Every structure is written in structure tokens, then in C-alpha cells.
Length: 172
Image (cartoon, rainbow, N blue to C red):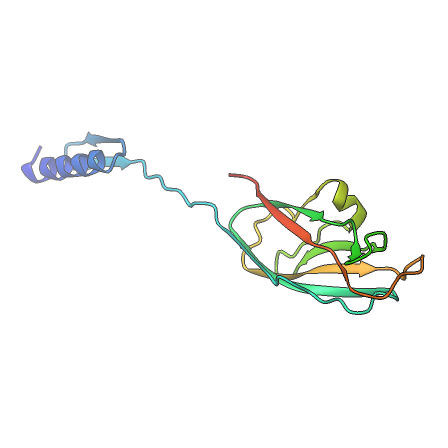
């Protein structure tokens, strides 16, 4: 074996061993072949941007609100919605509640929509849903809130609920 080929093989084997990879070399009469198993990893990452407060306006009639959001995750995900009060509750008189429904919707080439979930169901337990089979890379969307006209008389004043969105990674 010529000295140049032998030194090239030796250098490649040393570089592979130092890099922590396994390698194998075979030498033919006029050339050398080296195989190197290269491996790497991409860490899971997910960022969701959602405004902290949304004033949906007058509740005495049916209405809708769309709260914008953006999401950028490199993995499939599931999300859970949880309502603190089971609806928009009067701040001083807890017996008065305006129930609503919520749904997460994404736009973009891989847009997806979650299921419609009732606020009273989100209080008992977090409603778990997914956003499809593909990771939501850099997508904008909205959290859609809908409420019907109240079926009971409600007192005037401010109503509030705290909706918590928890993201659970899948496919790691």
C-alpha cells in the first residue's frame, strides 16, 4: 500500500475515533474506502405568542371574538384548554356566568383547527386536542371565542374568565 493512502486512512480513522463515531476502512490495491456513521440531533423547540388579555365587549347578546396568536414548533403537539371559572363570571357575584365555546385555529400551508370546547367542560378538566399530524412551523392563527345570548337575566358589571393553554409535545 502506498504511504500516502496509508497515512490518509490513518488520519481518517483517528478523526473518526476522536469525533466519537465508529468507522471502518477497507483497502483495495489502488484505493481506500472509509465509512463514517454521522449522527446528530435537533432539540425540540416551541414558541407560542398570545396576548395576555382580550376584552370581548358586550355580553348581553350573542357574540364572537378572535384573539390572534402565533406558534412555531418543530414537533407535533397537543394542547389543553382549561377555564378557571367555567365561563365568564361576574367579578363580584359569582352566580352570574356567561358560558362560551373556544377553538384554536391555525392558518398557513399546514393550517389546522381544534375541536370546539365548551367553557364549562374546560373547568371540570382540561380539554385535550391536537393540531394535526404535522409540526406547526411558523404559523399564525387565532383563538376563537363564541358566546350565545344569555338565557337568564344577568347583572351589569364586569365578567371575567382565565383561559389557560398548555402545550404538550408529541413525537420526541
